[in-house]
Length: 374
Image 1 (tube, rainbow, N blue to C red):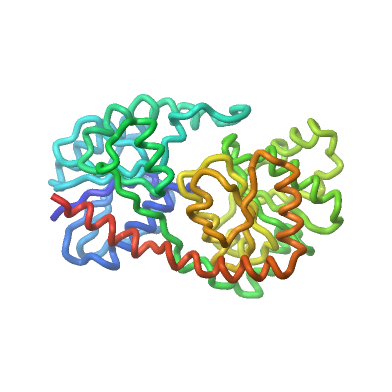
Image 2 (cartoon, helix red, strand yellow; image 1 turned 45 degrees about the vertical axis):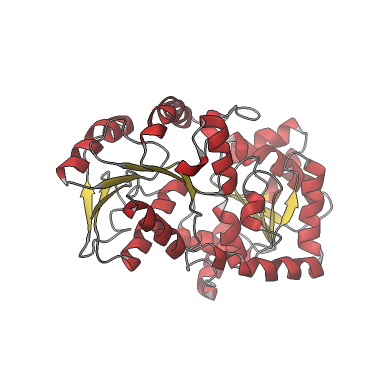
């Protein structure tokens, strides 16, 4: 069987969630399947060594500068050229016209929903949401099968797009074995020196999307920091000006020195931050899955996350669950997760068990069965 996998953004240097999911899936398929032939369709970019070809996995660089042109015009041409029997599109969208069956991973339908709070998305993100909102309802019923990443999201797809439940399969994301391997003392010292981290710190993976709940997280940390004079909050993926604006709005700009802005971090730095953080904060308003929850748990880092959307499905009883709209509750729970040693040990012990329930090998096995389904 010839299986095509769309992974347009696989080679871009700054990978985001769906890019990482595609990469880990392909790597795991390489481990478990030596019989079928795979054609991985990518766009040329800087990080072209993140995936290697094997005897039955070929990497095909498809030309086309524009995202939409690449997907709608060039991808179908190349999928047909290489004679694939099924094409798996991995990141919510797909060509409208294909000559072979389509499997679509629809991670979520957040783009179909009204944005909560001030829309701080970039123009690129806004265009992407408009494109998905226009395209997905048109292609969803053309699919051989639709895959999504949580039971909560499956219910959302049924509700929002009206797709029959039997046409959707839940295939959870997995956790790479790299998460949970303690970095070397040299690496830890290097990262601490790089970010000037002498004391305890919390970790928050920032993003300008309103659903990431930066506003309430910052406010809650300031409330916590008012009772503690040592802990800092490391924020990745956000400029300091974004947080400065929030602090100015609440009259707390004096707390700016309690924030550390790491920018975009490499995987090695991220692994170190997960490992060394005293608490990982993930009080998101909306997620299709929430993989960072499991990544932090693998390192034995207590997690504060939301009691809504897909977060409880992923975290189980191993995290401190909060109402993400309640700033005081988030702040109080930060303090509990940091100071209550008995509860910390309980959550850490439970957290170590969660990643084994979500592995990329299990993900790959389920996807292979879907590819081969007649």
